[in-house]
Image (tube, rainbow, N blue to C red; front, side, top):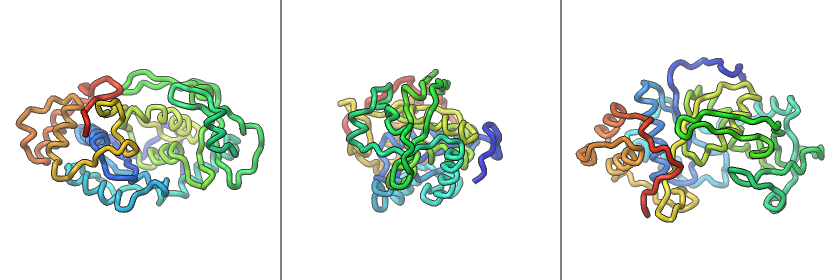
Length: 308
């Protein structure tokens, strides 16, 4: 795979994306992200792309991808190009790994999960690897591969959350590029995919804000195009639990598409008229495109939607 310089672009115009993991059907939180990224792209007469993040095969659920596609179609969120499945692009990730290896930035890590829990240090986004294997020179075979990060600080202006920064070594730590089972890490695959699809803006949940720093650092090291970012507030239940597949959030029903879309528009601060709740999916999406304002999205980390 060819990696042009940062800032070079073979794509014209706005390009957004939605990247679900097929570990289960979409819930309301996933629909909120999909709708926001879709409306952001469509209002700017851009393209909206779909990526299936299916590298973590043990997590993939039978027919989850098919259900996700049906859910998106039922809600009027139609993608422009054939979906990009990560499992079809392993050579791209191998090429990126080889390029980082050639820069002397990769080392093997033998730490077990139990050791990581004991040795890791607290950070703003969770535990931070303490660099235990950094200088050991372990052979790569059968071990996880980590990226050696510098002490520099990365700063961004996120369109949804404002100015953000992280000190790479102390607050993020050396992170996994390929697991010991051979599966490529999310951060590496995502950085490569954004470039490959020519994404100009990433719209996603604020729970992935820390991932942005990992991915930006990789993009700089690989000299990939860098998109802009907009992180949305998370949907939580009344117990302050994020709506997620891990927390068994209820799947959205295709038969309730109009209700689901109207609710998401309200949560996104778009103030849809009450009559819109009785409109068709096509009418609701068309209204959303015409009236969309990303500036009206609440500037918060979470939004409570009640028990679902």
